[in-house]
Image (tube, rainbow, N blue to C red):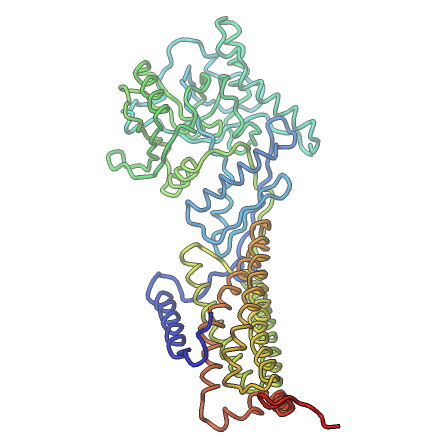
Length: 565
């Protein structure tokens, strides 16, 4: 509420507002390492939009619940690896990732399924180049004999038998576009690589199943594998590893990757290689400790998306829930793997079906168009205020300029603190907010005119007009803010940016009206300057004349207006 007439101290209000502005711009210029400009969205600065298409193991439509879970996990990955301004939304059975700036290549890796599981190695054999998919492997069929280590064994804290190749599978027929055909191919590949007979007690069945599975798996990294990310954890698996030079026959999964509590990348100076360090949860730590205690001098395979990333020989029991994955990683590969493992496995497998790059030139053109639209809107408001309110219109323009200074500083700081990016929809919200701010001034000034029409002076009309106008201003801004909040809550994508800037500008409008506009009008009303006290210069000449006429027409106090006969 405004102070009673004669008790308002405009200087204090203006000083408090100046303190707010100084504090905000001190944060803008003296904190953070970024430029003192708002972060811009893809439509204003350019960037990349990646569409990830989900695929189900049976070739059917993926469940909506799984899609929502995948979107949430990808969003956590985005936040975890520091890609600011990225937007992750669902479009049918696709996940659309929008990345502003020059981080598009990083976005293309966000759809990795990273389905990690731990399996015991039954046996392994070197990969022999295969010309025909049906040709048997040169080393023969595996047996149920104790597994042999495919290389030099290493302590669990620094395993050396790493490998990370792409798994192969029967290729799809050229030109195949039928969902039914895709489903059959996926089913055939799974039956080959996850046949229960691989671990049958019947040696003949086991040998035949393993021979067929190993023969079908040529470990060619160019071969598309429809099983990636969708291996069945309760069945054995034939997989490639050690840079596509080894094939492994693995038991069903004994420990899922979901038991990982944390994953970080680091450099192992002892072995001169990059590694991924894993910490297990309580139950995972217990399972891993029990397994390593019972399987000393045997191999455990770390299987990522049906690929054996590492298959170290266990030298001793690993207790405490800590271990490492090695795979001859580069620094970036180790970091990417740690990130996707840390933020969860996707319930579906994804492939990048489209990647669109918006050039910086197009983004600059959009930004210029938005600025021109905002400038024209401001110009029209300025002309209207100067024509209709004269000197009061100048106060309106000054208040709008100060409001813009607040909005600009807040946008810069929000971009640094929460990664908020300004897009075209947000610019539209700011332009509309100009009208909302100007509307508050109109309400106040029109209320002043009503008071002056009643015969009051400009000075006495200011506190009375403000007392009544502020209720209307509060109600109007409350409705605007409520609409923006509901829109932000219900909307997705760019509409959220529109709602956010609209709601933020509405709140800042109240700050400017209370701390700037009303105190400035009060200062003008008390001024002894003839120029400022002239009603015509304030756009109040006509209403003051009406007020004088009404005041003169009123009867004197205590004397009834009785007309003589």
